[in-house]
Amino acid sequence: MDVLWDIIRDVVWDLPTMSQRHAEEDALFVLHGHTRGITKYDLYPPCKRCTNPRYAFECIPFEIWYEIFQYVIPPSTFLDSSLSCGPRSPWSLALRTKKTLVSVCKTWYNVGIHLLYRQIVLRRFPQIYFLLQSLDLNSDLGPMIKDITVSCFVLCDDSPLVKSELNRLLNYCPLVSHFTFAIELQSQSELYSPSDFLAAATHMLSNVTHLEFGPKVFFSDVVPHLTHCKSLISLTFDMHGQTSNDMATEAVDLPTLEALRISWQSDRLEEIAVLGVITSWSMPRLYRFTIHQMGFFRGTAERYYFPFLKKYGPALSTLCVAVWFPDVIPMTYFVQSLLEFCPNLEHLAISSFVLIEKLSHKTLKWIDIWASTPERHLMKAQDFPMLRGVRTLDWALLTTAGPALHLHVPPNMVEGGESREWVFPGVHVRHDPGHLYRRDLDYLPGYISAVEPISDWESGDEYDTSDSSSYTDYSFPDTEDSLFRQ
Image 1 (cartoon, rainbow, N blue to C red):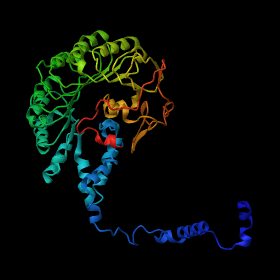
Image 2 (cartoon, one colour):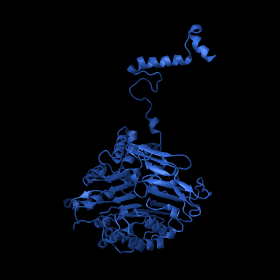
Image 3 (cartoon, rainbow, N blue to C red):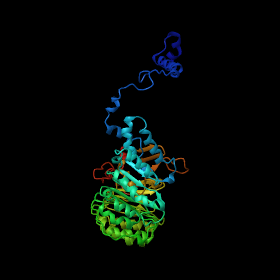
Image 4 (tube, one colour):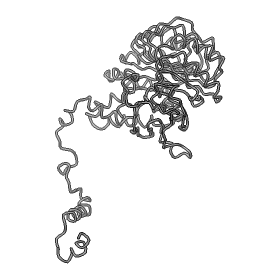
């Protein structure tokens, strides 16, 4: 009947159908109306700007606007602010987006200015002068700054100005909670050293919760001032290029410290010896420890790792051993030895040079593996009775997110068949069950963009992934909140 009607309709019926009439109207508006600014459906009265009362926007609470704008800015975990990424890096594009938000209107400015000044990165020393000029003109900007990164090269002639200018900057910023000090001096000056700056920044250190030091800041310059860090939660050291002369032996009491991360660029004894000094510290609340090391010598590692974990291992719930060494047999035995010092461990992050099939642990729930491609692992249920999942972390994310990626993106963020993506200019990261990887590299030959499940069990026992009530809390105060809202 429908076919017959389509054939003879033009003979017995002259009027168009409702759908045909709407289609003809749409075509007429496109043909004659769009060139004159006339559409079929009017969103606003015919004028060049919105005539809604201004209070329609102003009545929206500041918190709602701020929450909306958070979705426009990529999480800083996926951004690299270094100059090596060039002027079109994702970090530069994100900064450009923040500047655009404050240029739209007064309402957007009042909200976007908090995003623009929340995190300050000084990549060239002259930038501090321009920042201080802005703070001199508007004293309300200082309290907006929560995160400061000083990562610049300073000439000898400029070193006398470093101490005064940086301390003047901190006087404007009473609410700084994250501070990264990665300044590099052309040479050690008698007029200035990082220790001089830290000595004058006692008021900042007493409030900071996340503290990070770059490779050119000597350990001996830092340790004497850690006693002022009464609220410190996370501490990071980069020991690249430091020698035994740069070590400090002062006893340090960090009663609030929860996470410690140390990076080495080699297996040199002079660098790893810092762990022996830290072992003598008092850190009663430490439960997250991250090792990032390029190169490995088992004898040197055992000499310093084992005493540290013997003291702090029983309280650890998260351990990251990001050690790059292609000989899998000694690395596997080494990691298993570390696990024996951590009877209450729940989350382990390791490199792909470890055979997890040869590992075992009674309380381990999650395993993250740094690798270029996901692999299938045959694991015995009796070796990991509490295990809930194994995830692959893309090596391509290491340069931006760093070895602490497993903390910023917990493995239970996606469960079941769901996935999550972060898509911004220059950033495309996808989190599937069992795999966290970059999608902006899909154009490269051989880069994996689709993943199969990566864990199998030899026995018939299966682990339940639906219950996360006993899962460790991974949130740091004021750390990557926007990441979990994406």
